[in-house]
Length: 186
Image 1 (cartoon, rainbow, N blue to C red):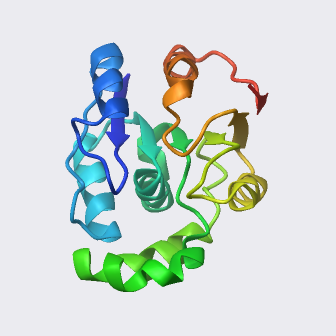
Image 2 (cartoon, rainbow, N blue to C red; image 1 turned 135 degrees about the horizontal axis):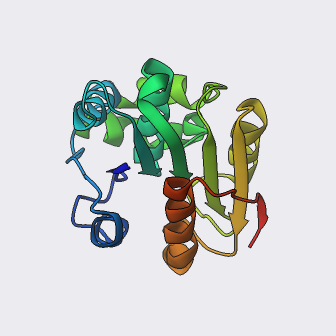
Image 3 (cartoon, rainbow, N blue to C red; image 1 turned 180 degrees about the vertical axis):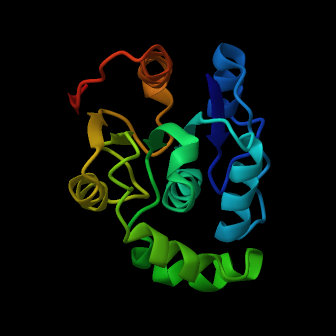
Protein backbone atom coordinates (compact mmCIF):
# COMPACT_ATOMS: atom_id res chain seq x y z
CA UNK A 1 0.00 0.00 0.00
CA UNK A 2 1.39 3.37 -1.01
CA UNK A 3 1.86 5.97 1.76
CA UNK A 4 1.80 9.68 0.91
CA UNK A 5 2.93 12.25 3.51
CA UNK A 6 1.91 15.92 3.44
CA UNK A 7 4.28 17.97 5.57
CA UNK A 8 3.32 21.09 7.50
CA UNK A 9 3.93 24.77 6.77
CA UNK A 10 7.23 25.00 8.61
CA UNK A 11 8.49 21.58 7.51
CA UNK A 12 9.74 19.92 4.32
CA UNK A 13 10.24 16.51 2.70
CA UNK A 14 13.37 16.25 4.86
CA UNK A 15 11.56 16.92 8.15
CA UNK A 16 11.41 14.51 11.08
CA UNK A 17 8.05 12.86 10.29
CA UNK A 18 8.78 12.74 6.56
CA UNK A 19 12.11 11.04 7.25
CA UNK A 20 10.78 8.30 9.51
CA UNK A 21 7.75 7.65 7.26
CA UNK A 22 10.08 7.35 4.24
CA UNK A 23 12.39 5.00 6.15
CA UNK A 24 9.62 2.73 7.49
CA UNK A 25 7.06 2.80 4.64
CA UNK A 26 8.93 4.25 1.66
CA UNK A 27 6.47 7.17 1.84
CA UNK A 28 6.20 9.59 -1.04
CA UNK A 29 6.64 13.13 0.27
CA UNK A 30 5.90 15.87 -2.26
CA UNK A 31 7.32 19.33 -1.65
CA UNK A 32 4.47 21.59 -0.51
CA UNK A 33 6.43 24.66 0.60
CA UNK A 34 5.26 28.05 -0.64
CA UNK A 35 2.18 26.52 -2.32
CA UNK A 36 -1.34 27.70 -1.58
CA UNK A 37 -3.87 25.09 -0.43
CA UNK A 38 -5.31 24.27 -3.86
CA UNK A 39 -1.78 23.73 -5.22
CA UNK A 40 -0.94 21.49 -2.25
CA UNK A 41 -4.04 19.37 -2.86
CA UNK A 42 -3.12 19.10 -6.54
CA UNK A 43 0.42 18.02 -5.63
CA UNK A 44 -0.96 15.26 -3.35
CA UNK A 45 -3.38 14.14 -6.05
CA UNK A 46 -0.53 13.80 -8.55
CA UNK A 47 1.39 11.62 -6.07
CA UNK A 48 -1.33 8.93 -6.34
CA UNK A 49 -1.59 7.04 -9.62
CA UNK A 50 -4.94 7.57 -11.40
CA UNK A 51 -6.35 4.09 -10.66
CA UNK A 52 -4.66 3.68 -7.29
CA UNK A 53 -5.47 4.43 -3.65
CA UNK A 54 -3.11 5.39 -0.86
CA UNK A 55 -2.81 5.93 2.85
CA UNK A 56 -2.48 9.71 3.12
CA UNK A 57 -0.81 11.08 6.24
CA UNK A 58 -0.77 14.82 6.82
CA UNK A 59 0.74 16.96 9.55
CA UNK A 60 -0.68 20.34 10.58
CA UNK A 61 -1.21 22.34 7.36
CA UNK A 62 -0.42 19.15 5.43
CA UNK A 63 -3.29 17.47 7.30
CA UNK A 64 -5.58 20.21 6.02
CA UNK A 65 -4.30 19.55 2.46
CA UNK A 66 -4.94 15.82 2.99
CA UNK A 67 -8.51 16.68 4.09
CA UNK A 68 -8.89 18.76 0.93
CA UNK A 69 -7.80 15.79 -1.17
CA UNK A 70 -10.33 13.59 0.66
CA UNK A 71 -13.09 16.10 -0.13
CA UNK A 72 -12.15 16.31 -3.82
CA UNK A 73 -11.15 12.69 -4.48
CA UNK A 74 -12.47 10.44 -1.69
CA UNK A 75 -12.12 7.29 -3.78
CA UNK A 76 -8.36 7.74 -4.03
CA UNK A 77 -7.80 7.53 -0.28
CA UNK A 78 -7.61 4.16 1.46
CA UNK A 79 -7.23 5.78 4.89
CA UNK A 80 -6.52 9.31 6.10
CA UNK A 81 -4.21 9.92 9.09
CA UNK A 82 -4.33 13.52 10.33
CA UNK A 83 -1.58 14.64 12.73
CA UNK A 84 -2.36 17.86 14.63
CA UNK A 85 -4.63 19.04 11.79
CA UNK A 86 -4.64 22.81 11.22
CA UNK A 87 -8.37 23.28 11.83
CA UNK A 88 -9.78 26.42 13.44
CA UNK A 89 -7.63 28.45 11.06
CA UNK A 90 -9.77 31.56 11.63
CA UNK A 91 -8.17 31.80 15.09
CA UNK A 92 -4.93 32.82 13.36
CA UNK A 93 -6.32 36.09 11.98
CA UNK A 94 -3.36 37.96 13.51
CA UNK A 95 -1.04 36.00 11.19
CA UNK A 96 -3.11 36.57 8.02
CA UNK A 97 -0.83 39.23 6.50
CA UNK A 98 2.33 37.19 7.02
CA UNK A 99 0.72 34.01 5.66
CA UNK A 100 -0.75 35.79 2.63
CA UNK A 101 2.59 37.46 1.87
CA UNK A 102 4.24 34.03 1.69
CA UNK A 103 1.37 32.14 0.04
CA UNK A 104 -1.31 34.31 -1.58
CA UNK A 105 -4.81 32.90 -1.12
CA UNK A 106 -3.77 30.39 1.53
CA UNK A 107 -5.47 31.98 4.53
CA UNK A 108 -9.01 32.09 3.09
CA UNK A 109 -8.63 28.63 1.55
CA UNK A 110 -7.63 27.25 4.95
CA UNK A 111 -10.46 28.97 6.83
CA UNK A 112 -12.98 27.51 4.38
CA UNK A 113 -11.47 24.01 4.37
CA UNK A 114 -10.92 23.75 8.13
CA UNK A 115 -14.65 24.16 8.81
CA UNK A 116 -15.63 21.14 6.71
CA UNK A 117 -15.98 17.50 7.80
CA UNK A 118 -13.98 14.68 6.27
CA UNK A 119 -16.29 12.74 3.91
CA UNK A 120 -18.08 9.84 5.60
CA UNK A 121 -16.64 7.28 3.17
CA UNK A 122 -13.02 8.20 4.04
CA UNK A 123 -11.89 6.28 7.13
CA UNK A 124 -9.87 8.74 9.20
CA UNK A 125 -7.62 8.60 12.24
CA UNK A 126 -6.76 11.89 13.96
CA UNK A 127 -3.81 12.08 16.35
CA UNK A 128 -3.56 15.27 18.36
CA UNK A 129 -1.38 16.42 21.26
CA UNK A 130 -3.19 17.62 24.36
CA UNK A 131 -0.36 20.11 24.93
CA UNK A 132 -0.53 21.47 21.35
CA UNK A 133 0.31 25.17 21.52
CA UNK A 134 -0.70 25.91 17.91
CA UNK A 135 -3.98 24.10 17.22
CA UNK A 136 -6.79 24.27 19.78
CA UNK A 137 -7.89 20.89 21.15
CA UNK A 138 -11.57 21.96 20.95
CA UNK A 139 -11.22 22.58 17.19
CA UNK A 140 -9.82 19.07 16.67
CA UNK A 141 -12.54 17.51 18.83
CA UNK A 142 -15.13 19.36 16.74
CA UNK A 143 -13.53 18.05 13.53
CA UNK A 144 -13.72 14.54 14.94
CA UNK A 145 -17.40 14.98 15.86
CA UNK A 146 -18.46 16.33 12.47
CA UNK A 147 -16.43 13.70 10.57
CA UNK A 148 -18.53 10.58 11.09
CA UNK A 149 -15.81 8.10 10.04
CA UNK A 150 -13.08 9.63 12.23
CA UNK A 151 -11.36 8.14 15.27
CA UNK A 152 -9.60 10.57 17.60
CA UNK A 153 -6.45 9.62 19.47
CA UNK A 154 -5.26 12.16 22.05
CA UNK A 155 -1.66 11.99 23.21
CA UNK A 156 0.43 13.68 25.88
CA UNK A 157 2.46 15.68 23.37
CA UNK A 158 2.75 19.10 21.75
CA UNK A 159 2.16 20.26 18.16
CA UNK A 160 5.28 18.55 16.81
CA UNK A 161 4.12 15.12 18.07
CA UNK A 162 7.80 14.13 18.39
CA UNK A 163 7.09 12.05 21.51
CA UNK A 164 4.39 10.17 19.58
CA UNK A 165 6.64 8.81 16.81
CA UNK A 166 6.13 5.16 17.75
CA UNK A 167 2.36 5.58 17.99
CA UNK A 168 2.22 7.29 14.58
CA UNK A 169 4.26 4.51 12.99
CA UNK A 170 2.07 1.89 14.68
CA UNK A 171 -1.14 3.54 13.44
CA UNK A 172 0.14 3.74 9.85
CA UNK A 173 1.29 0.12 10.00
CA UNK A 174 -2.11 -1.00 11.34
CA UNK A 175 -3.86 0.94 8.58
CA UNK A 176 -1.73 -0.78 5.94
CA UNK A 177 -2.42 -4.21 7.48
CA UNK A 178 -6.13 -3.51 7.90
CA UNK A 179 -6.02 -3.86 11.70
CA UNK A 180 -8.35 -2.02 14.05
CA UNK A 181 -7.27 1.27 15.59
CA UNK A 182 -8.75 2.22 18.93
CA UNK A 183 -9.64 5.82 19.68
CA UNK A 184 -8.72 7.17 23.10
CA UNK A 185 -6.05 8.86 25.17
CA UNK A 186 -2.53 7.44 25.00
